[in-house]
Every structure is written in C-alpha cells, then in structure tokens.
Image 1 (cartoon, rainbow, N blue to C red):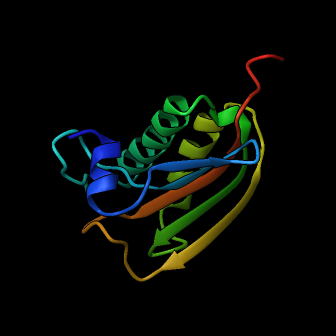
Image 2 (spheres, rainbow, N blue to C red):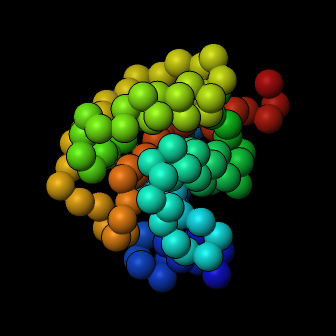
Amino acid sequence: MSDNESAESWGFSEAKAGGGLLFCSGQIGVEADGSVSSDAARQFELAFGALGDVLARHGSTAAEIVDLTTFHVGYPNNMEAFMAAKTAFLNGASCCWTAIGVAALGYPGSLVEIKAIARIPDPAS
C-alpha cells in the first residue's frame, strides 16, 4: 500500500493544493516494513524523507516550504539530532517553523510528526 493509499484508508489526504500552496499532512519516520526505529536520528531522517516524497508527488520541493510544524514526543529531547536532519533536508532553504511538545503521536513509538505548507511552483515560470 502506498503512503497516499494509507492516508486515504485513514480518511485523510497526504496533501491538498489550494491558492498556489500545498498543505501536507503530518509525516512520521517509519521503515519500509512499517516498523519504528528506536534511533531518533533515523526516525527524523525517515520523516523528512517521507515529507520530501509527498512534496515531490505534488510538484513541490523542500526549498518551497513556507511553514513547517513539528510535533515532538519528549521535547526537547533529541533536538540536536532533529536539527541535523532538518538542516540536511532544507539544504540551505529557510522557512517559518514551530516545534510543539506532545505526550504521544498516532503511530506507536514515533518521536516526531512533521507537517508543512509549501508553494507549488508555476511550471510556466
């Protein structure tokens, strides 16, 4: 089952476009087999990878993100590893960012969920 099919089976869209923007649902860091690594850095890398995949499927990129919201279990634990993954993912781009500490996420063992709003580049320009 694809990521989008998985989202639809839970009754939501992985992303929706409107007004030149792409609103991406929260992404978590799971392995291809659905397991969650106990290594926080691996989870962060996978979560940003999942977000990058959603952006690409909808014609956008990390450089087009205007607003990033991250939800962290155990905040501020693991922020050094998170910042390393965020910096690598954005690759020099900047955006607005809000980090929120939470008690738990919807997928057992997850330490972070990342949602974003990104511009959708105009292919004519």
